[in-house]
Image (cartoon, rainbow, N blue to C red; front, side):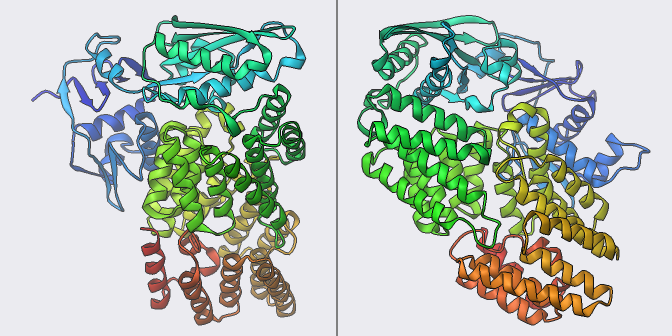
Length: 638
């Protein structure tokens, strides 16, 4: 029997003769090795394909580790838009291999741009994005409108159920400037490009929708009016475009009033400039953003979106300090107050409810956070940010579903992969967690520009801990090194640099390299002085060297740090570090008792999710009470 020339599954066709994979009528660029893997899996639908089968078929007579398979699977999943958490194509069979679970039909070889492929493609929601609008008059004072108009138009487009709207901040810079080639490479179906021209107090906005496949404009719109009517002009642009396409338009565009907008152009400008500063995720820009939002509120005290901006800016101030023993709790309290004020001004503003969900989750108030997040998603289901913030508040299956949606809408957003992997670590599904992390890192490598805007801090660190828990010290070391190279001036960079230095310290400890471990824990303490976990690690180093006086001194410093954590309401961090200290001091039963109380007392959520991969708890893993603790942690993550 001859092997099939082509395989069809979902919206994909794999032309085995031409060795190309098509999404609808669009060819995808994949390496020969990944295409080999796809053919192997698709040729055995619903059957278990073992790791040994894959190694034999893809790497005959070449010595490679299971990591090579994991990385290849991650690349294939990324190409298919699949997810290890809720797979539609490739299912992981833990410790055994993989199964291709989609229905597969054999067919004649696919032809690029075939007529038969077009209806299936059109039946799907089209992916659209909005490029920054061009400032025709090149007046620097009006430059802020380039992003402001684009963001508002994108938000209005989300009111149509006919589109999936790609976040403009996830676009490569060239696509944001209107490059059709870059839009095509980003997988877009449609791109909105436009311009604006100000003459005195008059404003003209023009826009067109471009079919990315052909480069042809399929819809045009133009709006003229006073600058102070900029909101109505933007909404008119969207209405004209949607009528021309044509698509279904919800009532959201028509209801812009009250707290959602402002009659003050200067307030709108201040809001936009503040948002652009926050987009950088650079702590140095947060004070400037606060001033922008405060200026917007001074101009219009009932401007709900400006209060949302203030809430988010103060949250970033807290987040930048969250790994300290004494974080900026006042900033978090202020952020929550601003979020509640925004909802008072406009109870139907989805962004306000979503922001409050994230704030309350950061404060450990998960029940309230879930309520706010669910309201935001109900009000605006097409917005990925709302699903992300609900996912942060949620845990277990609900979190996985939320982050699954985020990945489909905005695949470059690294924290979605991080947040999903957390659940699988808690469930002790380390192979799945590793696949998700590698998938996120592969996306980051392919979209360097977007990843710079939303860096995937922490993914390498978590992957390093997973590899270390699996006994792969060299793999762990490589991931910690990569985390350090990714470190920059971003909000979370210093925190994960500290974590990576600690990771190196644990690798050195496992190898008996006490000098190297001491140096690494010292580097971690340079990032965050008096950090409890680093001090406990340093105590273990001194004990290994026989310097028991220094070991006691380091442990005493760790206990003082634990008191600070408790005084500042950081009960989960204090409990984890207390368990570390007890374990290093040889009191394993006390450590397990502390962790058991943590899981009993903590509200629903991610408390203790790192327990299965914590190096300082490795000595407890063989004990039955600890295994029972892990079972309880996994049950919380269902």
